[in-house]
Length: 389
Ligand code: AMP
Ligand code: MG
Image (tube, rainbow, N blue to C red; front, side, top):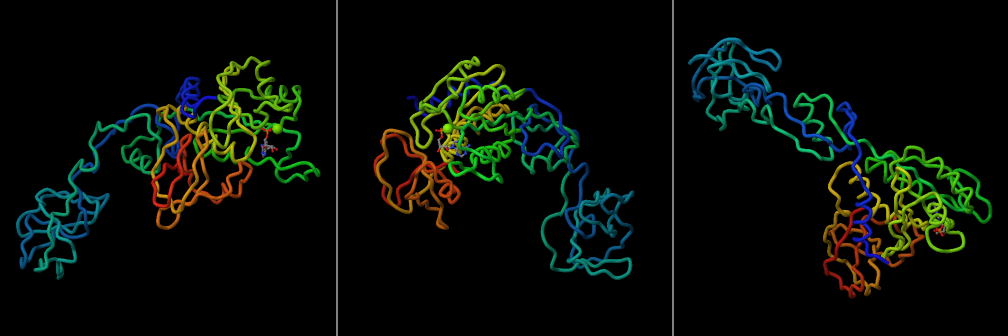
């Protein structure tokens, strides 16, 4: 058996970043920027008013000024403002020549085409300087996972399309005579395929393009047929049939099809059987069938691989620290990912039932508490490592 971090390293060594493609900005959220982007303009492109008010040469309380024009966003005042004069100005409007300060309208009394600056004058000139947000040539570095904030910034930079890594195409194959699809009527000895859908959802959120292939029955012929449908996938994920029982065909069939196997067993709970290698042009990961094992292996192995395929740095699932709300017993020899829930005080409670078939317990969890091999028992208040779900 190998450790989780060793298994992850080996997975990364099978992972080559995918090529880039150009997408319009409104399709770029959740994608990974493949090339740095440079601002094509200054923002704001001129000194702009930060408030609705009056532009003046000097804010002097008690002084009466003549309003000589108006500068609004999108239609500026062309002319120079002199002493004794003011220009009505609105938020975002260009600041006319001569104006040093915008007096907010609340600090002004207007009477016809004159204003009187009152005594309650606030501080600051209320002017956003040219380029105060960003300047021409400022760069967003790559790789970067693009969030809504980045999209807004890119748009402001006048960048209509971006170069992003292609979404990893992932083929998902469930194996088992006992499995039927959700919505079907299962026979008396059948169950509904579940983790295929959980993984599909996880992969979609991680930026991949997953595809669910037909369920492979537990024969070599059936599994070979379904593996033949993999087509142009970058990553093939099989679920189930990955341990060494009579019905565990994945290793056998994949090897007959030319899988260069990288490893087979990982010292972790849940999820001990795990397989990986290269199959033709694709990378393959064989996940255990137990629903929670498959989902936890998805978090710990598949998501980091999806990130690396998109050009992000090869790194394990991010970890945080949290305080325990209640004691937990000592851990065994395998790294244990325990389902747990965060309370309103931020402390985590590890669920008593950790069997790898219990999806309801996973559904109630928002973190996995990570226990190193042979970790000692912990008391309430102790700090542990967590992976957020
Ligand atoms: P296996 O690794 O094929 O021995 O499967 C281990 C356990 O997981 C068995 O109880 C299977 O019925 C169950 N299982 C396997 N694949 C799936 C799946 N895609 N969805 C739900 N349960 C599964
Ligand atoms: Mg099976």
